[in-house]
Length: 495
Image 1 (cartoon, rainbow, N blue to C red):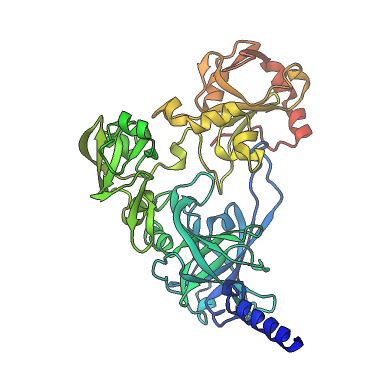
Image 2: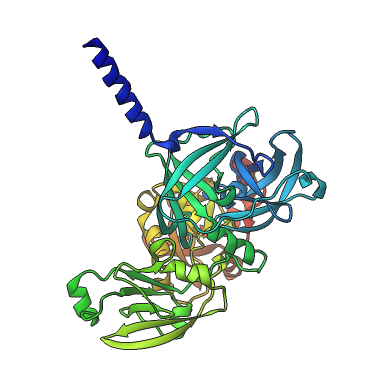
């Protein structure tokens, strides 16, 4: 009896061993001549107090070497960087690095060093072919003793998603693996058959889910690097919703179609708008390839992928894209000349890296231009915790302002001073006029102040209090003390 029980236990252990998930295993491999450590010290501005910088933050990555002695990292690693350093794994040799090219929307950056000989004993990695669901991926890390460790995982899904809160929707891999983040940081190379399959840039230890920028996106980034565009990837300028609702299909005149998505928004002056597309059109196909009711097309080897990938993977700025639509049940074709909206063209810019934000302090009243980084100062859940009137202006800026070339100037806060007693609780108000002159950006403030009378100027807002009065001579007298009290090196910085 005891012998039989022992045999049963042994058999059970063998069975469990056969089915143990391989991707949880960490193994030592060769290849640390193809990767380096990257350490970047960055100091971002405080967008609530833009005359100040935040405490320096250090970002680390294990980065692959590419041809031409270039190092690939995510843009998040080098954003607002003041110093970047590359370190060899085995020898510990270090060299300063600079950013050769960065695409914040694709979350990728290329680094280079002036010391060309630094890379002489390193072997660049080539890019892997596009992967598919269930393909094996190795995530490389460096141990503290410089040993290269690989953790095996498998691709769960290939889909289109956002790399950052406000960037273009691009292709990404989703993996599930048990990964212990080591000293190298959370940006790690992902390899397939000893070739670079992507960069891991997100890992959730609780769910064990990893997100990887795939080689296809990296290849496009490398091809377009240095082209003068803010991003390597063009845009169509339309947004869409699924068309599974039978009533919506009937309303759109698409009840006899097997696919198609409902265009909900057409950006002003976008490729879609210039081509003649309208909200309410039904997108049926791109370049003859059908689009299903969820906005997917059949893409080998991935399977069904969002139609955004069709544009991102095949086209550059200036290329033409043919689309087939239904308008009130009538089939039509249009040709879009693809373009890219640069961040400075937005009413509310989506990101502001590597440069100082503007501000204007007048008698303790702090005026700023509304931007997404300003809203993100309210934390990870800024869309619900930031002032909703400002979140609304950001979310619907196309509908609210169309093709207007302007910014939204806000009174962010009031630095308490004798001359602004009674106004010290004012904050996050949208400024419309100063001295009756419309304010469309920070640079409009000085010309508006020149129209002041001998004593008072007026500042008008969209909401209560609709108007306030400032004693300009008194404000000017108090400015030196205000600067000293709040450590303001300068009272204004106009972009």
